[in-house]
Length: 224
Picture 1 (cartoon, rainbow, N blue to C red):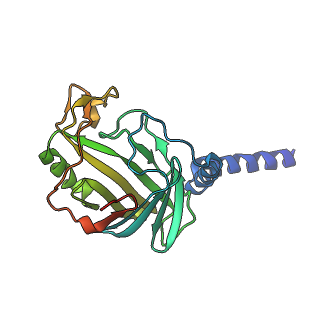
Picture 2 (picture 1 turned 30 degrees about the vertical axis):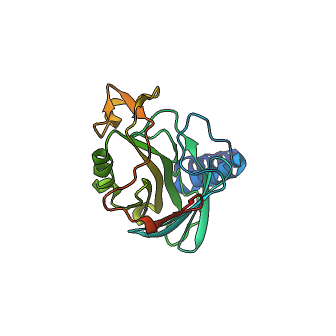
Picture 3 (picture 1 turned 90 degrees about the horizontal axis):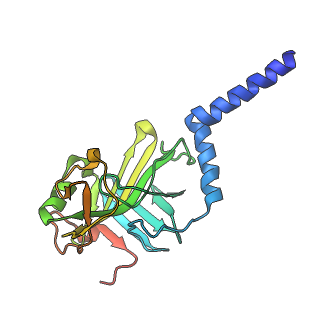
């Protein structure tokens, strides 16, 4: 009887560890990322980086390098180490983006200088005017970003209290004209170019953005 109780207790504690602790859930997610490999990006998602490409960026936080796999896999290099995740494609717009993201469940990375997890994203941001794009870039929530005249932006920060690395890659487009069939939820509309719950997409990359630094971001697909 005591043996049965001991085994049951061990099973309960193990289940609690893997399901309800950051380390346990992180181990599960680390294994999950390995098993997934590099799945294909769904056609509906608005991605920035071509397959097998690289971005090197210098932001207010420091230097970050992002590499893409053939599909949804992304590699992040900072402070001399590289970690990877398999992104989750979005199925509806979230704050304008229909790209891909990874919410960083658990401590899914081997720790380095206090960082054990990554909260990352990639996608397009479509605006009706340059002024709307500028307001978005200059908001407090994007103070960790560097960007170029053509609207390629990289946001990079660390939250050591949460053992968290934050990296987002954005491509800005201006004069979106085509109504998207993927509606935003009402609470996600934080700028004025979303009308009647239909987000405008399409348009073109900007040619000049105030406060840009073209030397701060180098992308492997640059032709200039």
